[in-house]
Length: 204
Image (tube, rainbow, N blue to C red):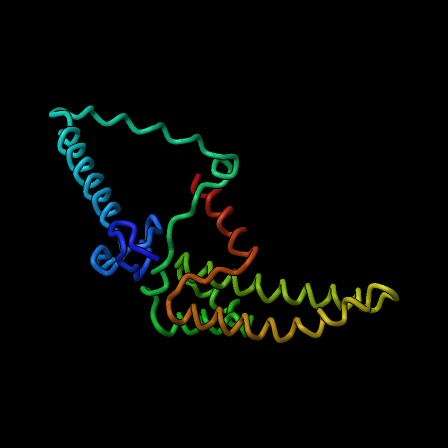
């Protein structure tokens, strides 16, 4: 097949854009024919002229609009204000007291001893209450699941939960003790939320 632009010259390829057959002379390194190259140059020149004509903005930009008013607090924010942060409260406690607080999670009698000898430290008292709530809560779940396990039909579903409660308590108590020893903020499910609400009511 002959070249589209040269008569009686065999074509070697087709244009990548318009798919015209072109010879080696008409084809550039990108695979475009002369008409497509001319069209690209025209488009480039017209876009450059538009950028020069419309590129100058106003000398005095309009002032920024005022920020919108913050939304009103929801029902949960009105009921329970956020408690103050306690992320580094245990860092100021002595290592001996912090070790006693940490051991109160796997061994609840030490939590009672910590609660009685907290010497007015609110964070130590909070950790002791969390340890007692965690252990008493697990004990209550064990007794409740043990009572359900003796029922004729419901006991079938209670036995697997009763078998898993011991390992879950052991792992959770070790994790809580490790975080308390490292002076991190220990958050026990349900117990910490109840203490937050209690502290919020006391400070209100």
